[in-house]
Image (cartoon, rainbow, N blue to C red; front, side, top):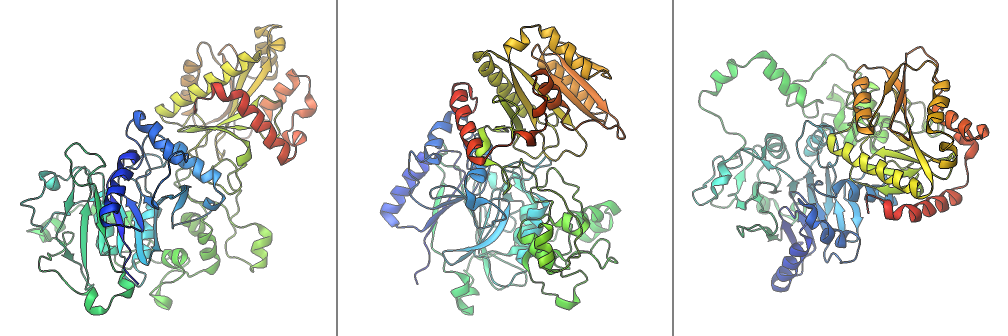
Length: 604
């Protein structure tokens, strides 16, 4: 069979029209091509480009070639990717071969290693960041998984990363290369560590803003060479090369002589440079330096670094758990557990499997629950005794009630409440898995304000007032701000009357906030720092009522709903389960609400 023909592209930055016009020209002169890989920022860097970009996502303009991308961030990324996770049944669960965004467009999320058109492809999507996890940021789990896959037999043909590796120009002839190649800014040392272990035949990266094709370099302990290719952004003003074609023969089909062929200009690896007086520098290291290094690679998957807690033989082997095999076999110091392996295949967090908890929650993107009890029993008694409920509100969850979705923004989405008290009873929830709506970034706070304003305008059009309420509870799994529309016929008896009725229920209330909703939320965020659980309600006039709940205090979980059910004279609807209807009825209710809300929807 003929080798596959591949196109490689630097940061698209949402300029898909420009990109696919260039693809058409290259295809006409040198095609056809099997697929296109994009590295660097895929989504627009400016809201001005979003409309043209969405023409491709929504299918108004066809994508002419199967396209795979890393760099899942930029304007519109959160909404588009959340829609893909919630709207396509094929995207549920743990997938490493690309999540379908739309026809011919696939998102390489996190990290992975898979086969495509005969090639072995590995990737690390997103940027290095110390911020809370959201789209466009890779995690330690992504790194650990790649290190485990690097031990698998066989050669990785292509390694795709969003970021440039640090030090790639070491030992290279850069006399004619752009001056920016020597600049270490915008480079990622983690990528350097990974590429030195994975040893791919081709490493392709973006985000640096320049084109650079390095000479091939040799790798430690393997016969083949690696070629690095950094690509410039699509449509860059300096007219640097942003698209490149290759036709690599898969290593799995090559003879040993072909694999070991080294071009005349091959250099030594840029990632194993020994600095002068390195032994002196090593001896001068602080003790914490080496500890930090060993802690960064959290799991012993290769024996190349000292293992923490080496005497604990009950810990799981990350290599076996993630891949199903371990080259050390019976010599491995860690447990090879098939039940844990099966849970890992279902996307369960390794920390949760290994320790029963995950310190990265809610930032961790993996599941923190196991298979249900009946299924587990049929597979034999498991050593894993931890149980939790899967989050109902994460858009990536297989159990999310996607038919209730009303609107999806950049950081927030709106959904019809399950067992709604009245027709205008909805939930505002962050797309990111957060314990409460107060623990959000400033830009997400601004979007929440727009959603609240839109719902108030919608309710005003239908002669209603709005009450918002939320439980800020230590053990809440996913934040949800409840939004309840109340007909003005009740409110007009006296807005003060609503406050009085709520105060009767809040007879133990101690906290007040007068003034605007913005000031009220500032007041609540200060309260959040106290570490206590509390309940709060925002009344139509903007007044905030809240009550702190001690650990030993019995406070009704359905408190806000019970109060409003009483106000409406329908105490029999205080429990949401008493208001449940069929999925068909829920779907129709959601569609009806979306039609009425469309002109106010801030995500439109």
